[in-house]
Length: 148
Image 1 (cartoon, one colour):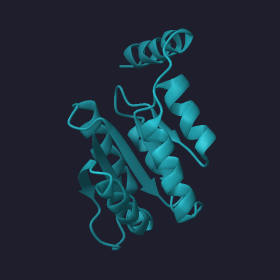
Image 2: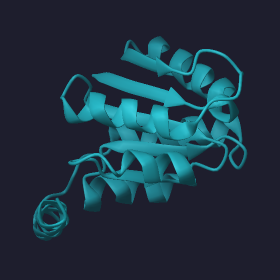
Image 3: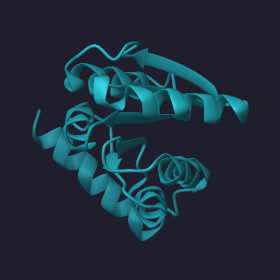
Image 4: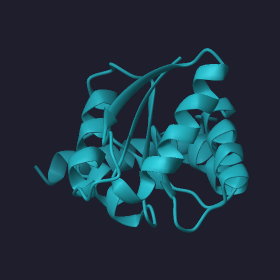
């Protein structure tokens, strides 16, 4: 498995913790930045992660900013991306099972480290159920096509 990960300055510390956690599990990481705590703009990194997933250079993406809101909105602007802002394991599980989410968004200023790591593990270990949910994901894709 290969994961693209990116954050703004607010998410930098959590990004580094998640990277180390995943590398300990022998998961390949593509770190698109930021690489310091210097103030940067979250849309840049949301887009970079989303494009990496869109191009199939990574299986999934993880984006992190202070709340997770802005960076998830940014990632969702990239065609084919279904970024889900998750604040607990249930949301992460449902994002994968029912929505086939391919990018996980986290808020570094609203989650503790242990919870964030548990959300990441849940997201990455949950499979898409398909079935009736596949029809709904296709409806989302149709919306993308209509809005081009």
